[in-house]
Image (cartoon, rainbow, N blue to C red; front, side):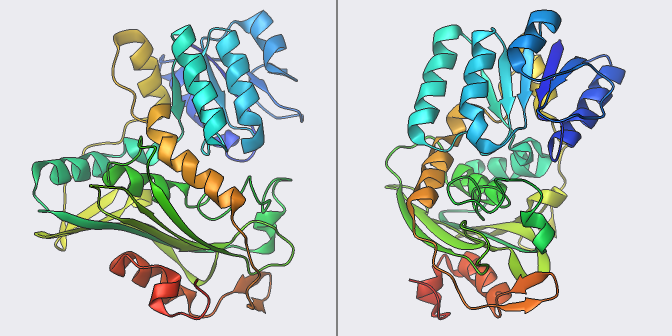
Length: 348
C-alpha cells in the first residue's frame, strides 16, 4: 500500500518513524512527503500534494499539518482517490465535518482520525466492561489532565496558542475529551449540550490553557473533562468511569486500566495506519472513523466561539502556574462537576 505524508515536522516526525517501520515490515511503501519547509526524510519531498501524487500515486495520505489546513488537504486527497488518516483535531467546524463526511461517502473513500488511544487494548477492554454491565449503571464519565508546559510550547508552531485552532481540549487533551465522549456513547450525536469554562493564564496567547467542559445528552451519562497546562506538577491524563458496581480508572497514555483498584490485563495496541491498510485490504472496521468524531468537532467549534478570560497566575521561570488547579481538575473529574460548582474562585 503506497502512503504519502503531509507534514513531516513536529508530530509528523512520529509518522515518519512509523512509516519507515511499516516499510521495513513490508506493510506499506512510504512514497513521499509534502512540507512547506525542507525536511530531512529518506523519501522524495514535494511542496504540495498534487505534485507528489502526479509522480508517486499514493493510495493513502496521512495528514499531520496545522489544523486549519486539514479540510482542504483532506478534500484534495479525496479528489486524488486516496483514503486519509488525519491528525486530531480533524476539523474545526461541524460544517467542515459534514462536508468531509459527504465527500467521503460520495467517492467511496474513508477518513480515519488520529486518536491513537482508541487503538489501545485498555480502551477495548474498558468498552467491553461497560457494555457487559460489569460496572453497573454508569452515572458519569470524568477526565482530568494536568501538564506543565513552558514558553517553548507556544513557540513551536505559528498556530500554537491561537484561539479557534488550539486550546486545552482541542489539542493537548483532545484524547481525554474524545475518549470520554466515546465511553458515554455520544460521539456521533447531534443533540449534545455543552457547558464551557475556558481560561488563559498567559497574555501572550489567545487560546485557553485551562478548561472544563460538561457534555450532556438525553439518556447518556454526563461527561466532564477538566485540564490545564499551568499545573504545578504534571499528572498522566486519566479517565474515570463511575458505575454503580465500581469505578474504572484509565490512564490512556500508559495503556493502563484498573477496576476497583485491580489492574486489568489488556491486549496489544492497534496501529491506526495499519488498521486503515487492513480496512482497504480486508474490510476490517476502522478503529477511529471520522463519524466517531462528530461530537468532538461540535465541542471544538464551541471552544472557538467561547470567551477566554485572563486569570491571574504566577510566573515560575519559563512557565506559568495557576495555584490550586492541580487539585481542582482531579476533583472535577471525580465529582462530575464544573469549576464553578467546585467553588474554586474562577469558574462560572
